[in-house]
Image (cartoon, rainbow, N blue to C red; front, top):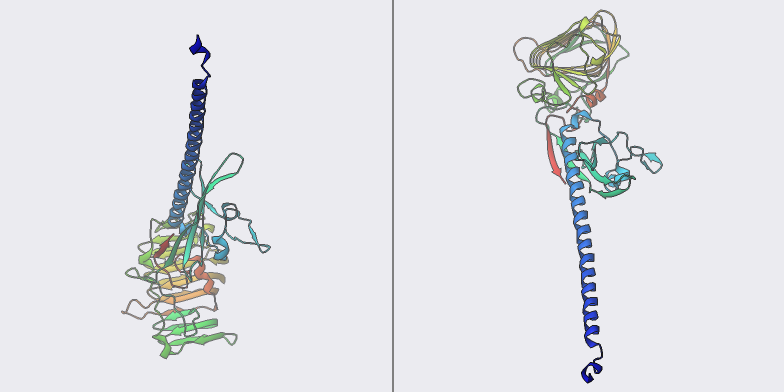
Amino acid sequence: MNVMKKQKGAALIVVLSLLAVSLMIGLMSMQTSQVDERLAGNYRAAADVQMAAERAAAQGWSERASHGRDSVDMDVLSRMSWESFTNDNYLHAGEEFFSEDAVEAGCPDGVECYFRIFDSCEGDNHCIVAMAAIIDGSGRVLAESEQVFVIFRLSNDAVDIPKGPDGGVISVYSPSFFRSSASTTFRGVIAVKGEVDVNFHNRSEYEIVSRDDFDDIDVPRANADDGYVSSIDINAPNVVQDCSPGGKEYPDNIDIIYCPGPVMLSGASYHSSLNGKTVVAGGGIAAYMNSWPRSVDISFISGGAIHISSRGNRDVRGLIWAAGDIAIDSSMNFSGLIWHEGYYTSGEQGIEISSNFYFEADPSVLDSIPDLSSSNGGGSPDIMGWQ
């Protein structure tokens, strides 16, 4: 009895203290686990959106020929958040920043990703910029990627754009002759190494590059061996292979109608969807425009010769570029460029015009032809960096 009376309850206090310490350790462990879980979730989300941005950039690379290219201040672009980058109506200094819409790429469920293509990123190089984000049901951004840049340039292996001593694009080029048997009104720069026998109208405003400077001009190559024709990728999304394009309708995303052999376009061959397209042929091209509309925007690039004929006057805009001779038997108002490569040495090859002809130089026609819009020339694209 005396022993029981001497008990003070110390064991209870010790046990309660141990329970309290254990509870605190347990709570701390749970908090640490929750923090670790959040960190792991955030890391996974960051990894997912970055991988999605890489995927969008890769899709942009494969579809680069199918979308318009923007021109913006890259310093401003590089500091953009997801909301600004994907906002096609984004304003900078009170003006719309983008002229082309962002392109949505195919990304995994739960992740949104977009890319844009730009003309000038580092000097004259082009680039694709992509971003991705995870967004909850209320539209709140839970995680966003860093910007992924694919910097590329158009190589100069296949195409040399002929430029004069002052750096301007040559309007008419031929290493042999340029003749016209009818009255010709001409406004542009002529680079012809051989004979220039043209009856220029007094309204003409032209410049003839000195023959001493001719050899310094890069020769434009169209031929099917090492020129533009040989560089065509028939698997590209903007190219269709068709050697009989008579009266057919082509989708808007098609830029080039390609044939490894010759192509003939008769009056009945014209369809409105040909407007703005480029016909590329490994062989010759014959275009008979008798039933075509009065105003046409079309370019011809041939590994052989080009012959254009029609009755009646027409307004034609485009590039006429041939490895062989060029013959135009049609009264027309033509704006664009005419290049004769002089690839074939047998026979008389040159540029011959046998109808009244009004020529206005327009180098901007190159902007609508894939791999010719770059000041570097054209040809196949080379990736300069992926970051």
